[in-house]
Image (cartoon, rainbow, N blue to C red; front, side, top):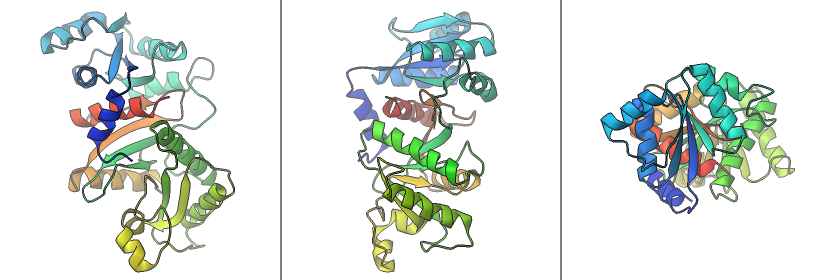
Length: 301
């Protein structure tokens, strides 16, 4: 069980084999800064793809000294940078990937290319990892940034993606809470019906590597005291490691309420491809970018 982002960073640092991050369009000060911080902490070694002259100018201006361990591929065009970054992953030259100064769509188009991309027969989904006040450990939440309104089949795949990521981080049996407005099955609410179905799939061995509870309300999932008061008996109650939200809008609002209003810390990655992908927004803080890199390193095989 990881209690904080710092715990996760320490866990990754303890790995004697450092993960290689492929940064596409690396001629970007903010992305390079995050990669450099992760390098200084002994978490990653950089593989940089982009305009080499600009990359080296940024490194010199800001004192980003990778001690000669950086590998730079000089590529002038955004699309070609994305293609090169993806090919490096396919060739085993990187453990995960990050978007630099380029459009997200340009990178993802190469990732999902049927002939040369990184698809492995799964859907891609977003997993956010949060350190929030008044909860005793890190909690993951999915999908708040990729799939708008998933049906039951897609939700099952979202769960599997998140569970695989947590398994890779050392969680043998992550506790998964499928969130609904109430903990009792409501046949009129599709998210409640889906939650019960996901729990049944887990019990039948169709979704493995975790323990699923649903439908379950947010307060019960994160508070054992409230669960006990309501008489809700479940190993997931008050101990959730992963929260499954009904749709992207719910996840987006929940995540932002934790970080903006409650003072929480977030890391986020795209999973379901051959490797995790760090796709932070332009408004992401340096801390969020750094911990997203740490998360990707921890969640990659």
